[in-house]
Length: 434
Image 1: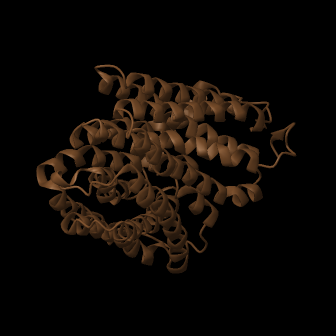
Image 2: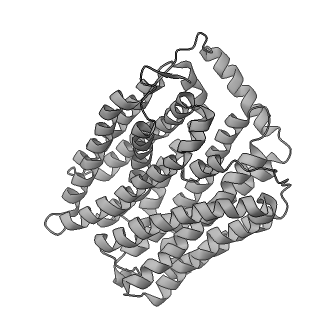
């Protein structure tokens, strides 16, 4: 055990809040910011491009993660980056009242993204260092559950509250309150974690910065020497091409007024169908996808997992064509889409774990793989706005389906050998880090 002084404290007292703190800033950037800018009249192409560009913090985080190992006190780092993220979100709230709010808020959200991406590294490191193998497996499910609590708080509670606020005040003022609450929440979690988080047991020897640099170079060189690595990188990038676009434009379509081809959902309706029903469906899809992959093995399951991730995107084409007013129909349709998203995403996680990562530097190579995954997602996100504005919503959702075809084709040429056993705890914990 590496827990000091407070080793008798149950991990649930900090694992739950730690992964809420990991999820809140991510969802603030990837989802809430886009909806905020939509309410303020920003075009879809600007929303998609700039929020996608900010997301590059998660692309490059594997490059600086090794250097954080030199610092002894991960608890201090976790709290520090939670405070930086919380204060930056508070400044986003203040920027809503300025004439050039868009540029200022984007810069502040970039600070949130860097702090959040770095926080992910040290939070996961603290989790691993503070729990033994049995506890890591035992609480892996709690990681996913409370990460999705953050999703529900963002897309369920806060979106609904934003809608209520906008009934009595301008959108900019309403969203300022929402981001102020996010900032206060993250700061409150940081203060709570000064008490609840365990401390690492000091190690007698720590690598120097030079040692870390030399090892990092070896890790990267070894990664790119893997047989077939460029095809694997291409597959990882292509896997999320369709999903990256629909997860960006889909919520904007749901909020878009009907005169512009959207469904015109209110914030309360959006929070119900996407925040509550969508989150439950995603969690269920992730669980069933893991069991499905374990049953068939990755090699046989991969094609079906790709299809399950992309075919449900037909839901958005259906909605953009039929334009239903019935909230029950919309909710069921979006739940099917989010179930497929969760189900299929397991395929990418397993591919990175079992095909790309194995070798001398397995953990580091998995981290590099996740960086490539975010790269593919953010490239798709950045280009989605311009494509949607050029094609319109209906044709855009057809294009999203076409975007999935290259990954399907490439999957048939990958050299995949099924593992005898699947690390179910790792899958369960990893599928939530989107």
